[in-house]
Image (cartoon, rainbow, N blue to C red; front, side, top):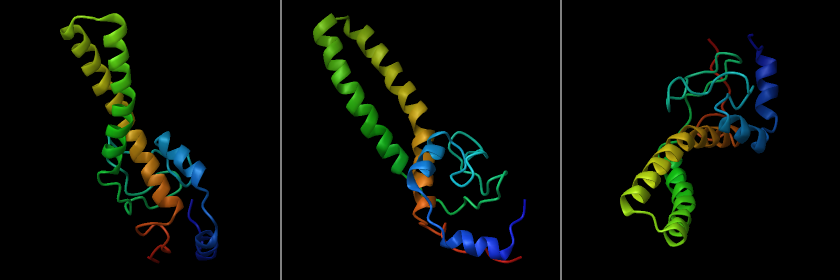
Length: 137
């Protein structure tokens, strides 16, 4: 589905809504169309969307998703750990094992979703090259 130069220039002037782009990123879908997969692996962002052709290689998520994951997991697990320890008084080995598995599992689940959110924000705000017109071939 190729777009003409006129359509591309019209699209460059339109606002890109932030919330839908973030939600599409959370679902690990292309922030432009919401249909194509954003990631080609666990955390590898595709160079372009296979459905709409939107260039995605501009993203600069870097360490942002990891920092957000640590922030969220830490704020969820720390009070839960304190509550479980004071309320149930389990054996420390059991408590450590359960919370280690929970922390790792939640981190692995959140990390690609938060990466998609950050790429969606960058796309919606036209950051890091997402706002430039494509180069004519």
